[in-house]
Length: 414
Image (cartoon, rainbow, N blue to C red):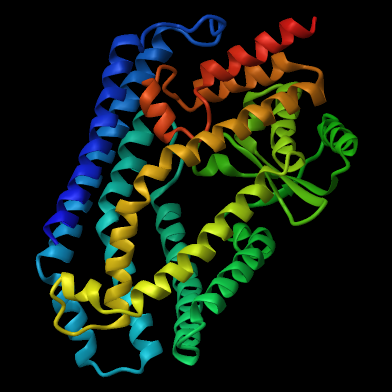
């Protein structure tokens, strides 16, 4: 058990060190305007970015440290053992025990994270001009998200534990299949049922942008069912755009903040980048990879959970399937850590490919470049991350590198 504890502390210590060198690197280079960013980024923006990044990272560090201390006390200090024994003493049916076991832990985690969420939203995001959410709206969102997560978690947990109880030898296969089917179902149903509970979707009208979007999509063979604008500005000034839908028919959703801050050419470039992910089958590849890893993980979990050595290592008095799941999840967070940079590498590779696709589709790489610059400016993104930190955690390449590659490719094509 001591080896497991030290391994977890080592992993967390390495993460904190990476964050430290990233902030130190920004302090040294953060006031330098990258070449080609002149006219968009100035000293005042860099100062604001510098301060915003530090405050966000400090809050993240405090929250992470608080969470890690609680987790270690919970697992190694006997609280998990006591909680598990209490659940056993209730003598509930297997499925109901599992449902209550994990729902209560989920609620506890949410309650403990609330102070950090409130401070981030109403202190930091307010201070730097991002937050537009009222307290009333924040509470409404919290209630709705809690109800939705409770319903979904109850469904997932109940079905999963029912399968585990009904099929002791092949539950890993059936649970994996259920999760896969449920994820596809959520991809289909979420845009129509869940997302409208939080945002108002209105058809994009006027100024001819929708026609240009449809024309651009036709060039790629993608059919667009609807083009929507959502009222993201009632919560935040952050910008975004995304596709939804399964198959060739897609819904395009644009944040009103994006439409207000970018030219039509830049909006088309951003959408072309998202199209690039579809046409290059990045999303399909990621789904296949995730499901393959999940399949392997489900089988390995089945083999591990079949034995009691995990509970024995941690000295659990009442060995239950649920406490073994908690311990297995804790161990997975340690084992999976070295694979983070590998996942980040392939994600960055896909982003570069989508950038090149967008530049070729629009024949306007400069609009793709300026859209990235504006996004980094509007979101106060760190323009000077430490290379090691970026390689480890960045799912998108640093924006300066993306812009340079786009402009370099544009120059070579002239």
